[in-house]
Image (tube, rainbow, N blue to C red; front, side, top):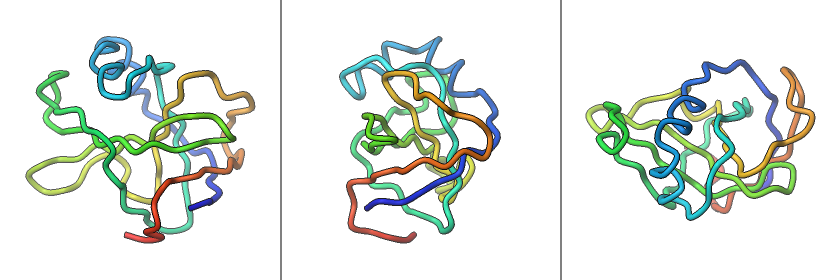
Length: 125
């Protein structure tokens, strides 16, 4: 599924998590992430398709992290969705997609649009 998203504000929680627990994130996907995420707002909710998961207890967090492989601007990355096992919520929801990559993505500024490819047939939540 191809879509476009607009860069919106960030909280920097993933930069800290990915720096302090780099090995856990690397073990989950097989490569080291560039710490942090790009938050893309899309025009509708998109349910995440789980490719792998980091259990919250592995990194001292109360919620799990579901990861879905994607491409952003033609570069490999993962959508990361915080998920609370008790209520199914977490993070920004399913219309703000948190994307992490293995390399720096040039031109990331508030309001910039990026093309994102998710490898799922499900177009909505």
